[in-house]
Length: 312
Image (cartoon, rainbow, N blue to C red; front, side, top):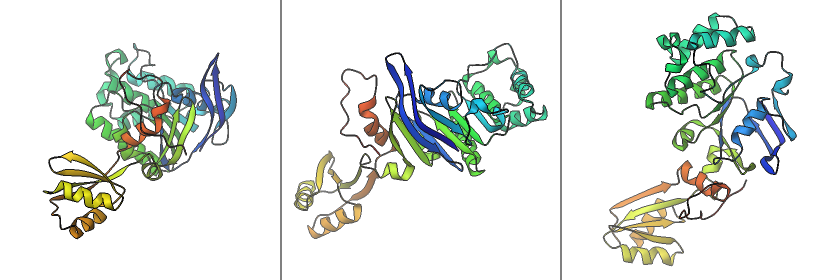
């Protein structure tokens, strides 16, 4: 597992990471979310021993990565897909990494097949698309067959098939009992992939909970959309029972504070016909925006402030 305890990183007057504490458990995909400048990359670099904390500690399998004799066999990481010598072929890049870590040469061919580089492994990296560089970076992370994997925006530059492949890969790695920490701005993919979420803003922890708990938090909204030929009558009937009702046009109402069954029963009791009735829940994107709204470092001048924030 990954253990982060009181992790803090100070750059002069700027505190990039501020007293972070959380765990990343094996057998699950943990999504690591936060606005730009929230401290995600700095935190991952400290976990991997690439940056020294100002205070606190980060352990992988109970030890700091810097104290490991064979770190590539314990933890694999993709932080920057562009950090590759452009004059080398993809295969040579992996061979150099494998030789440095004492990993058998045959493993290079295995990870090339695993990430789908195929014949492109013979080409120089300077001719790779961003998506191909991502695949190469993931191959390098998997070289040592590690039990812990840290991926920073691995879906960048991938087409739809590539994104689907990444989703399946991280799911399979977690199902094998590995520890997977995944950072991404693609909320729709994170909603489908992650089991647990760690959300930070301005270097501080905002949420550390399962996907289910986050989606059921106060930041998640549930409402019912109902269409009726008598929206005014139905709105009055629902309001009498203390429900929040907002018109949505075309004879539709948005009802907060109730489920579809309750709205249907109240419509029946009021003698109002219903032509459509459906529950709508907030997407992870909306919940995330509500949770992190006060922590956004940069925003356009006319952007409205979010309705509220939930801190776990």
